[in-house]
Structure formats: C-alpha cells, structure tokens
Length: 146
Image 1 (cartoon, rainbow, N blue to C red):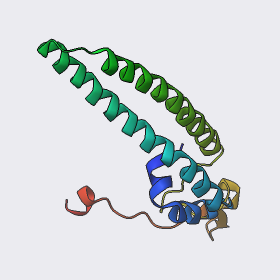
Image 2: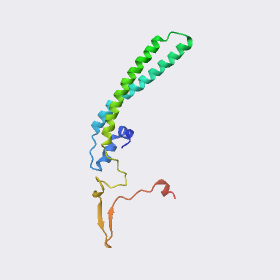
Image 3: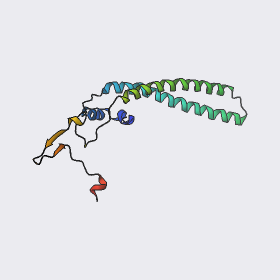
Image 4: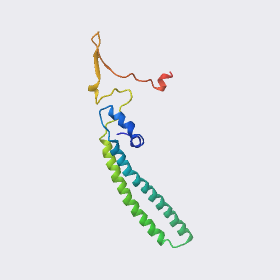
C-alpha cells in the first residue's frame, strides 16, 4: 500500500509514478476524499482537547470542593459528540483506505516503465545469450564512498 502521507502531500508525483505502469490515478477523486477526511480529523482533535480541558476543570473543582454537576454533564456531552465524530472520521478513513488498496505499488526509479515484466525489451547477443534492457542502477551512498 502506498504511504497515505505521500498520497496527501504529493498526489501528482504519485500519479506520474503510477502512469509509468499504465495506471491512471484519479487525483481529483483522491483530493475529494482528503477534503472529506480533513474536517472530521480536525473536529476530532478539537473535541478531544476540549474534553481533556473539561476533565482537568472537573479535577480542579473537586479539589476545591465546588459543585461539579455542570462540568460532569458537559464532559458527558463532549464524550458523546466525540464518539459520533470519531465514527464519521473512521467511515471516511475506511473509504479512503479501500480506495488506496486498489492502487498498485510505486515503481522504483531503477525499474523500467511498463505494467509488468512482459514490457521489458529482450535482446539476443551475437554469442546467443539473452538479456534485457533496463536502466542502470545508481550506486547507493554507502557503496559510492567505498
């Protein structure tokens, strides 16, 4: 599966890479799903912060011996809202994940373009040996320095 963060941050680069395999990535559909997910994620974070601040206020009120009824009711309300919002977020995330599972893996730069190995160009040398044409691999930094 492709890294979700990469899909969010650079969908055009992912689309270009997948195009090397002959796969067309619907970037607008991806962005639409992300636009659907992001507000729910922000709201979940906001509700969690508000619930935590309320819980802290309950503890402080208890330490001072004050009435906590309103704070406890507010905490229950926040917990219920958070639960509903998390369910919405999980639904959108499941939809996004299912969509991502249909994507092929990205090709490494050293891999020739094509849907699979049948797209590789094979050649026969004068001596009769068979090989395939591919891009040369770049030396890794560790190998280049040794």
